[in-house]
Image (tube, rainbow over all chains, first blue to last red; front, side):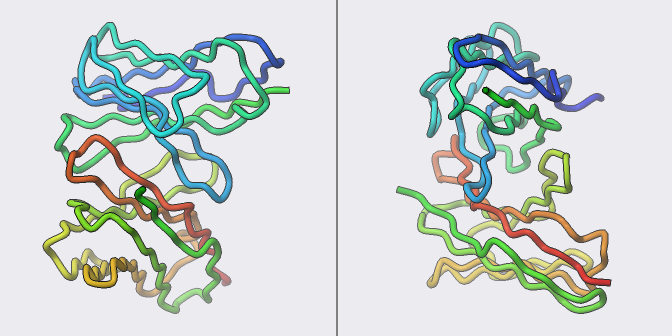
Length: 113
Length: 111
């Protein structure tokens, strides 16, 4: 198993550009989520999905869109990047909503200038 | 709302014990976690404890939970330089859909 994979590892965007951060898992996990990590603030939940076709907002959803057309993939879209979205983004998955262990991807470091 | 707090930095000498503390606010938390993040890497689950437990030991790691004070601690015995990392405390809501993370404690181990 590759686990949770994320691409790209690094990205620089200009303000107003759009892009999609990719996340995939090969463990047949139902639950997937996106977090952003900012210094001194821990990880904050952006969006999550409890299964294909189902998504919901987390703590900081503004400026981000998600979709879940397959069990494996959970892309995060930035429609119009802003400097405030400069952060490290982590995707995570777990077998189901009640499962205790969550598996994290290696992260995408995004800089918006 | 829910909040998880940790001190941001801790420095210890190699061979000593490290104690990382965490406080949380949600009394209905079902799981409490400790994650480790090494530089440039994602988060790795170190250990977890159910909210109906007081203590859990796993090799060099000891987790203590004081539900009355909503206080969680992680003790690392015989701390090594490879333990240098950021340690995140996290709580899981009863509804399961959210895991709330603390800001992380950066542990530096001095040789």
